[in-house]
Length: 372
View 1: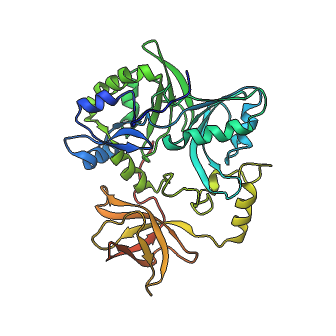
View 2: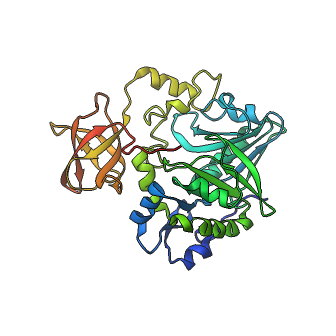
View 3: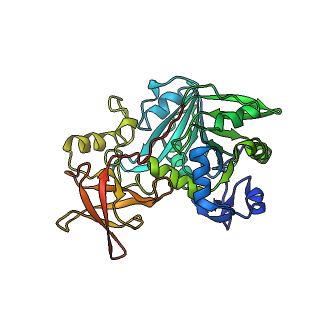
């Protein structure tokens, strides 16, 4: 297992040939050539498959890093926002890497708490090197931080029938949400995390890079009885937007802090230290920053990132951070940063390329799902 390296073109996942064979529409995601959608229905069909049955996603572009050595857990807990001590191994936890000076979000990531001396991290693709760099710069003697970006693949299995698909492969499904187990599948090691980014019941599987194609093929076969589909990152985005889940580069950026994103639930405010604590505590007390809200279209149109939001008097009160057409609701939905004072059911207008789109302020999620 070695550090990921770059080349002159986009990186490809271990499933690249599978996507090509299926005729997937490809696009750049954080420097990786990844599938947006597949023929035969595209985003709408893939979105519906996950909401109603099951779908699988290649998310191998996500980063992987290992922090290992005596005191690794204490070190990471002093860097990232969430309180690692709220969980015990083998549990995973959502957390954020913030900038010490500004409190902005360098990245949000999942930390797999393996032991006091070992954590496996899954950052976003484009931010992996920076997260690793920052950790290495402050790692104490005896703690090693290794970039394993292309040592492992990741396949997300999401939807009401996800457990049945894993059971067909003999993989475990009965562990609690955000807990993980290392399983043997046909002599291959696979980490199985009960989690996902769609709101539906699901799992994220972490096989070795070279084992990922065989596992993908087995999953495709196992979900056939349920009319499951391979799904691209287009459907992953519509699914997460319907749930109001933040995406780095949209709802979380170097200019959008956890306070603004309403992600304070992932901040250990009582911890002695984490990167950016002082500025975030001060911002939280000041209560003047914009806050994240959901917007639901009451007219015809699709809001997009960067569109201005105006109140009834025409005053600009915010900006769209993510916008799409909800395949479930058949309405435009958006996540937005709005000035303080905005409230549920407020009527606003979004400027979509010079056309006014009426929307109302709501509290996500936009759709309710059953995860049990």
